Image (cartoon, rainbow, N blue to C red; front, side, top):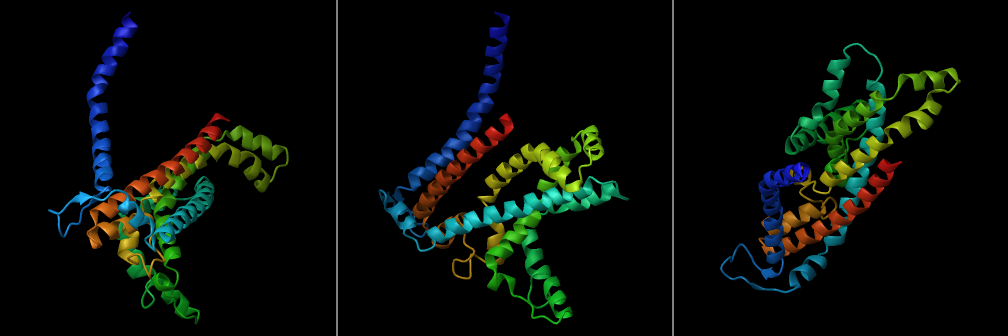
Length: 290
């Protein structure tokens, strides 16, 4: 009886926060869904009318729609490859005893605390600029022609910037998992004659596999919404070469003033994100059950 009363009291105390969180999520989503069926332009806000599925058809037939979905997938997969592989390499390096290990670890994770627009500006004007950037100076030093990264390789440049920001996160999670590896297992493998590659494949990777799935899951959720780096560096161009789905929605809403079309794009983005999250959660769940 006491247990039931305690459980009921706990639920009652949690109810206000749960209701507030529910309202916080549902009300904006419901408003977005409502606007997606309306003809609503910010240049003429008084003239609002029912549009049916026109906004969805308009957004679906936009020449940039499928290109933006492809760019979104390439961006997510490219950043994940760089951060997971690079995170494992950096975690293995930082796990070794070295002089000034604490300072090195702080320096490695520091890019994660840089705001996306600031990071994009630094890369655009100080590192990748074809005239006076660091990469241009390196190319000139070796007698090569500097590359205009954002004109010739716009999406790849965005991937590099975003990966630089998220690499510290992956490194931190994987390093934590790596440090929980039992030292006796390492010693036993070494005594059995296992080399570094064998230990890495059969001991290290299985041990940090759960951490890798967590990194992939969390990063994918955030990478689906990458927007600031594109706005600051390429503005979605040249053409639609670096336009992803969030930037296409921004362009429709704030450059085209079409709230109805942008809302339809937002609903489509939510559906696609939930599909991706569903399959990722299934993959993560299978991995965690092993």
